[in-house]
Length: 431
Image (cartoon, rainbow, N blue to C red; front, top):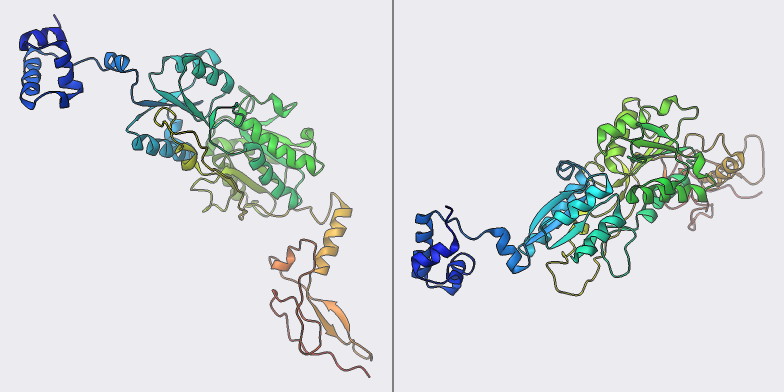
């Protein structure tokens, strides 16, 4: 028969609470009495109080549940998930808590069951497909939680960025470069759809909230540039991995009108896109690429991407560990341009001749000038424009002429921020 706490108490001649204190509250006993209890329990084969029963009596288990919609290995392989979990782990360490990773099944019923069966004091919701259903299940248990949802309810503890606005900034960067024929790449855009181009009637049909918000942000920027949702190519990847991103974009050359840019909903998908395009020597010259997250591999690859601080999102105080009033941490996003994005190939020669004409006019106004006198002619010199090397600052004019500074010689000076192009001399005096 398995020994019990009662049997140990009777053998030592103390109460059951005294034996329990020997394991859970040793400061309540003298070292000699505690040692006698533990030695008697060892001889009887008693392992100590059941941890589950002890947690039930205390009312807490010192654990935080992290919810995410994917397989368990995703938490250790996805670069942004690793950064997020690093922040969560650091917060748990500060409060002497443990972490319980809870992968959620795809079906809503299974996901809610996973929430109901998790032995935790509170939840950190990293990502969830049936987001509202998951949060309702947590509220039903009466447990505190913090969520990264982009649509929190009033009173919810929330930490994150405006996913839609952040995606809009990346797309606006490409519309400013002249891109109008683009592809939007996401993971599992419509569950069960094959990898590659996908017809999505409306962005609201996308079930996953994060993917939906990012695609909607892309669509907002292109709608402002005159490109409607049906004119955008939507690509779906079978997984949120580099290999899946590469597989999804291999079909692009077969399209009737291949896109001039690919906007990915994550950096790993964008990096897979770069792998394919760079193998074909097309990145930056014919096709621009943007990502989302700014993981460690993005900068070395020259990937233009939306930057969001993963560790800061995860390091928000767990609600079950802090009694302080909730103050949402400041988490912001930005979109630093890098070499993977450039001007659309047909920006100056094709789609909109009116736009092209205005751009050429702006570029001429930004070129430096010098005074020359035509051979065989008298009179004042005339102004001519100088060619500007590709990649020079003045080659990317924003539509306003650069500031000029006075020239002591009396000649019109070159813009102060441009290097001199060839010799320059003062114009001859008028005759």
